[in-house]
Amino acid sequence: MNTDSWIQVGSTIVTAAVSVASIFAANRLGRRDYLNKLDVQHKSERYHQLYLPLLQLLINASPVGLNYSNFSLLMSAHTFEG
Image 1 (cartoon, rainbow, N blue to C red):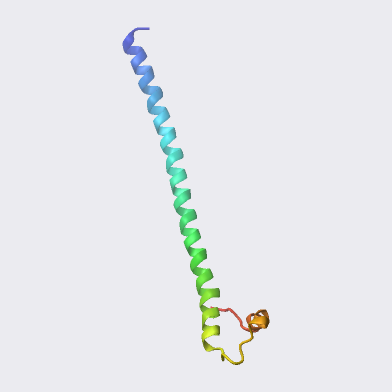
Image 2 (cartoon, rainbow, N blue to C red):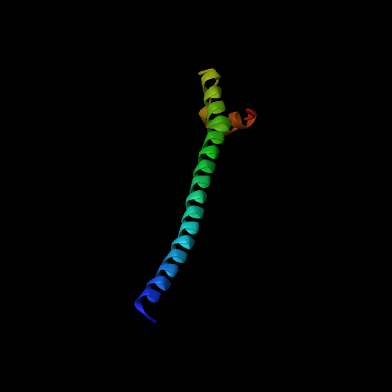
């Protein structure tokens, strides 16, 4: 084999390797983006379904009647439906 044929074979191998690597890189980046969006969505749901009702409950509760030792009973009495 002469030098030109080796260059052509090497070029073909490099082209195939770059193509396969780009497919894996695109898949990994897409998966990472999806997982980040899913994480943000879960945090948003948690904020709207737990933290906001909890804060509203604490703000609206009477300071005299609010007993922190029975806080779990207070939380179970309140529904966290959005």
